Length: 155
Image 1 (cartoon, rainbow, N blue to C red):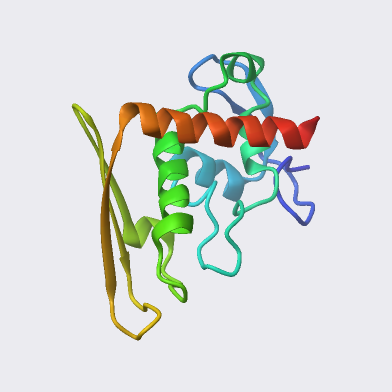
Image 2 (image 1 turned 120 degrees about the vertical axis):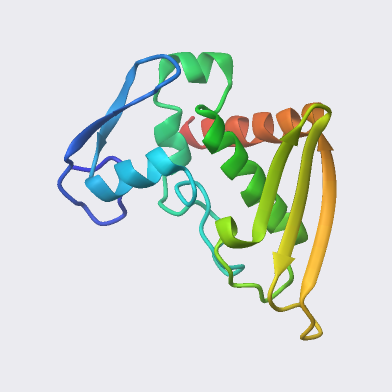
């Protein structure tokens, strides 16, 4: 059965960490596709449900012993997805329901990340656009905190 789905679904694939080559566990076709694309595997759209798209998706990525030991979130598209999720939680307009990949952009630059949050609805019915620049250190700190929180949930 799929290791991530809320409702038990038959697994079709053995998911593995592409960074270290270690098997993480069985996934259904839908979860495996979402994990491979990275867009919504870690981020649930909408302000009412800011947690993971599927409970345990972050913990699933950390089933790789090497990733847990190194305290990293592989591969790079998941790190960018987690930054989008964080920015959405911090900077989104209160009633914004757009999916994260549609309204949070993160571009890596030499000195860090240029991030923009576009929301269709703000508190006053006006479209909101917010920009922030994160250094590599700020982004790494946020990702480290996310990994530590996920590992603490498993403890």
